[in-house]
Length: 155
Image (cartoon, one colour):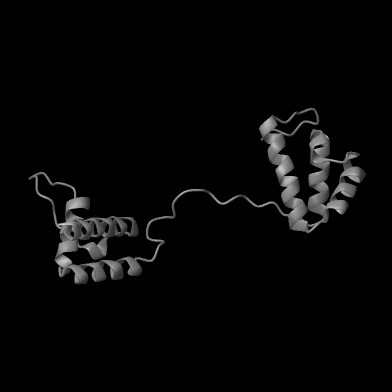
């Protein structure tokens, strides 16, 4: 691991990130604006975070840490892992949509088979029971049932 050099310089993006971190620290510590500006003057001899140089940023962050700031990693963007969402509300919705349309649960199984079953060597698709689908697949079945209901209404 490389040691940080006192002569290193931050890129613009790193600088913006560090200044944002200072403002997050200010909020987390619960510091009033006047106290924050006094801290900037005392630690880095500036009156605005925009005027901080690299060493000043490091000093201000160290002082914020001393005052109780604890940096946390931001939550990672993206979808939740499959299975983390409760499937029961989606299954209940599918059952209600089937009952309203006068269809059996085998209709939803047919949709699931058509959408999610891979073709075998013989060209046939093995059946899929919709209750075994994950939340993403169940949402797709709800969408298919909704489209089918709208088609039926239009006819």
